[in-house]
Image 1: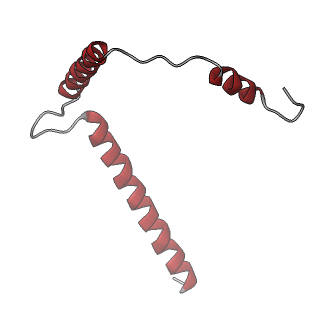
Image 2: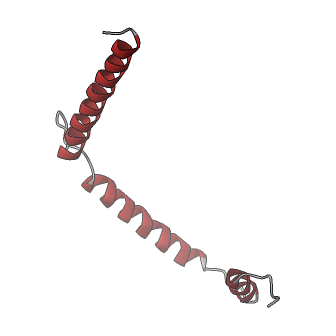
Length: 85
C-alpha cells in the first residue's frame, strides 16, 4: 500500500485477487425463485388497504398542511409589513 492510498483501496485490491466462481444453472434458478417468493410476500404485506390511508400518510398530510398554513401566514405578514399595514 502506498502512502496516499486509502484503506478501501487495499480492500479492493485484495478482492480483485480472489478467484471468480460461476453458479450452476439449477442453483441460479433456485435462488431466483426464492428471491421472487420473498419479493411477492413483501409486496403483499406492504399493501395499503383499499379506500383507506395509513396513519403515517394522514399524519404526514397534517404536518404538510400545517406547514403550508404557517408559510402562507408568514408571507402575508411580511407583505403587510412592506406595505405598512
